[in-house]
Image 1 (cartoon, one colour):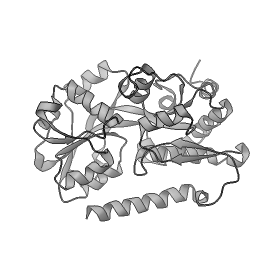
Image 2 (spheres, rainbow, N blue to C red):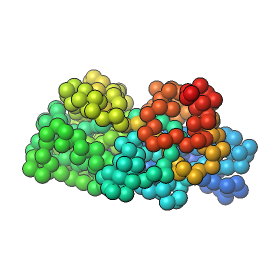
Image 3 (cartoon, rainbow, N blue to C red):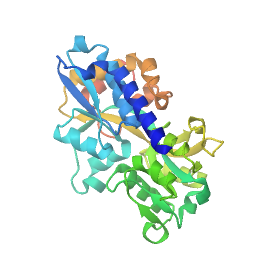
Amino acid sequence: MIHDTRLFMLLSLVTFTVSIFPSTLLAFDEPMLSISTGNVTGVYYAAGSAVAKMHNKKRKEYNLRLLAEASEGSVANIQNVTDGTTAFGIAQANALDYAQNGEHYWQDAPVNNLRSVLGLYTEAFTVVAAVNANINSLQDLRGKIVNIGEHGSTDNIQAKSILGFVGLDMEKELTVSEVPTYEASELLQQGRIDAYLYTVGHPNLSIKEASHGARKIMIVPPSTKYVDALLEQKDTLVERVIRVDYYKDLANTEPVRTFGVKAILFCNVDTNEEVVYRIVKEVFENLDLFKRQHPAFAKLTPERLSTKLIVPLHPGAERYFKEAGLLR
């Protein structure tokens, strides 16, 4: 059943993508730049596609086409933009913070050539658990089999940080799985894990897939104590509420308050100023249309697009924000 659901969702996504870029199946006759995003079932890919769609409304005038390109996520995107493999990338705010400060994956090798373009939606820290595993709080993860994402990924880094913050010893108190998070929904339904930790935009296809299986699932709410403490201590985190009506077969009946990190569109410091300016301009001037591209974008405002961007602003973005009265 779960394979049929995955196939249906992937076919639906392909149809959606082709509807955005029907000409991607044809040869291009204009210059192209890529936005490195995430796997095709995730919100990064939808966000990159939406940015490209806004820009490409005027691609003939600008003589430039943007394309969303699938990738392995934040860490890969930062590497891609740093080495010039792609012009733009999308990454979590905390990953950009780690990169510029030389921490975690970038330990002792800070990256100083990244520049922010736009703040996008917020990705929520999400604990998906099987109801029959009796996990009703973060502390209930003790003694369980928990997937925390692939080693070196931002999901993995975030999960380890949070588990340590709440006092759980991963070596002694958990059985830890480190497979890519997009595989976790199937593992949960197969009974091979009890829960998985995922920092992601909602609604998310992986969680929809998990909720359609025979094993009933829920989103575990972090306690108010932990949420408040993390929001106070970490500048890269923001408050987030997960709507459970996105997932009709979920056991939860009330919204889940948690915390999250902003997804940020960024580029290399050397990226052409006019190109960046036009990308920002088209998103802002088509914001209502942009917000309709995915439910995760519904609450975006000019202020959210232009604040808490972690790395320095690119001059092209700064120029537009000043013209729009968002910067002085």
